[in-house]
Length: 221
Image 1 (cartoon, rainbow, N blue to C red):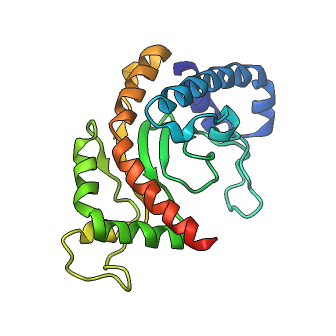
Image 2 (cartoon, rainbow, N blue to C red):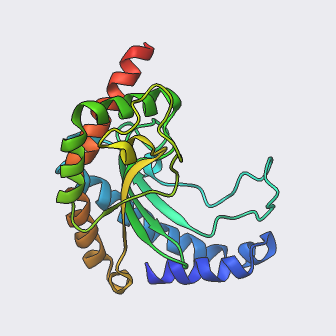
């Protein structure tokens, strides 16, 4: 992945169509490496979480081209890349496992990001019922910490204030994260082994979250 990160670093300094076109073959070579990694990652995660079995690389990866129609930033290309492995694919709204590659910092994440309101409500109800189990799952993970970058200042409406799991109830994203050891990026096989080992430790939390998400989707039917 080192070559891909180097490419993304150069792209961040030359984010225009002319430069990208001139380096298109370099990008294609890097993209093939990422897709090979993604395919192995999907299979590795499916070994401990069967709910993701059968996903394709396209289900779990992102285009490098930005949608700039409604953005003030007209840079045409993303300067990051990632793989998100979740039941039914990256757009289905389920909790899953994410690996992020960016020159400014790489990390791994497990959980639910930007859930729909009805899904977030169901997760919060799960916290009321099984908050202790969720905390235990977080603590049992391999060095992950709770992501707090998107949190309410107050307890959400219709939920009890002063609850022992108030910090969890105020989250708008529910996931845990861990910086990726950049020394692993030089060897894709070692990287894959380390990422799978870490993500496997997050499965109990992802399972709890997807149970809550399934409840929400069932109520919407």
